[in-house]
Structures are given as structure tokens and as C-alpha cells.
Length: 258
Image 1 (cartoon, helix red, strand yellow):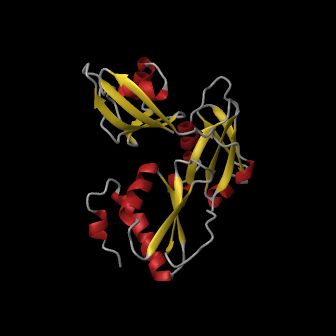
Image 2: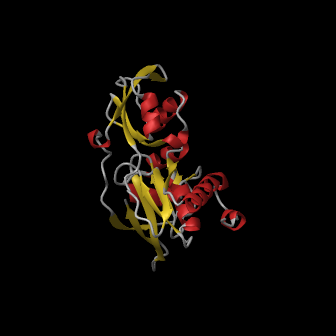
Image 3: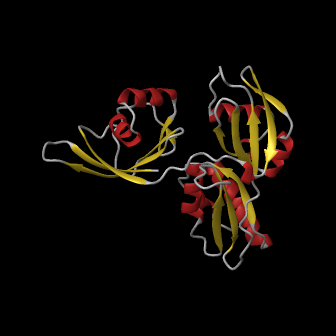
């Protein structure tokens, strides 16, 4: 059996990590590969950092489409070569949002209100004013297929779809950027990285749409350090690669945007 105390020591998400330790023990006991529920990005990173070095096991990830944030992990023995196709189904969510703007969080809350567990849902995204699409477990798709729900006062209808019929979110190319800023404040670096005004960045911070290292952040004045990553809803990720003082006491900042 795995040393739970060592694996969980100082964990940021001990409950989520425990689920994956249980999964790993199941695979070791039964010799059968197994898929995890959908995991958040920070839980994926923490899990792979703590469990990825287990000598008898290896892990693969799949979120249903390239670049997915929420993914499922496949745990299997290193000497095994299982089918790597994840059990993931597409989902179409239709509704008239012409006069009521929609967000992915709105869709997620509505589906959970319809009785779907959070870890059964992968990424969800908005498609214009007619609703959204997303990925989920096959059992969640079966439960939702043909059912009606609501986002606020707007009725929605769900339909299970094959993954290949989805219109995936636009994939951003990875770019390296350089800028010179007066400080290392979050709002200054986020403004340069995402190409938005500092006022808009502050608005996103206050609304909770901008995250720092996958966690919430409420201070636009927070100082960033090398390795910090900013995630902005619908605009991708900006990572701080380097911070160097210039002769004029400013900061030369190198960023990676994806």
C-alpha cells in the first residue's frame, strides 16, 4: 500500500489527492487501468508532482480536446499499454441568451443544479448567444440528454454529442513577450501579457475572473515573481519567465502567453 501520510503531507488539496491515491491503490491491487474524475488544473499539477514518481505506476491525461483545462487522468502499471481513449462525451447546451450574456460558470452552475456532480463535468464554453458546449463523463451525458434546465430565467436544453461534432474553443499559439514596466505589480504585468488596459485588468480582478497560480486573487497591486502564472477567463494564461532590473530602475519582464 502507498504511504498516504507522506503523499498527503502539506497537500493543497488533500481530499482530491486522496481520491487519486485510492485510484492508484485500486490499480496496484487489481492490475486494471482506471480513469479519474475530471480534475481541476491545480489538482492535476499537484497530483502528478506527488504521484508521478511512483515506480510501478504511470499517468496519462485527457480532457476531450487539445488544450483542455479540466482533464481526467488514466492510472496504469508501467508495464501495461492500455487503450488511451478517455471515456468522455460531448454536450450541447442550447438556450436563447441574446439579451442575457452567458459565462462558462453560468453553464456549470446550471448543470450542477440539474443533479450533475462537479467532477463529472470537464470544460464548458460559450458559443455565441445560443448557449454553449462542453465535455463530461458518458454517464452525465446520458443523464442530461434531452433534459431541460435553466440559467437564471433562460431555459436550456441539453443534448449528448460525439466529441468530433463539437466546435472547440479557439486554441492560442504560445508566444514569448518582453515588456518594460515600472513595477512588478499584477495589474501592470497582466495588462502587458493579455493586451488589456490596466483598468480592465482591475475590473477582472474584482470580478474574480483573473486567477493567480489557479487561485483567487483580489489585489491588483500584488507583486509577482518568476514562475507566477496568471489565468484570465477566455484569454488563456500568462507566465512570468524572468524579471530583470534595468539601469533606470525599471523592470524588464519576459512572459509566455498561451
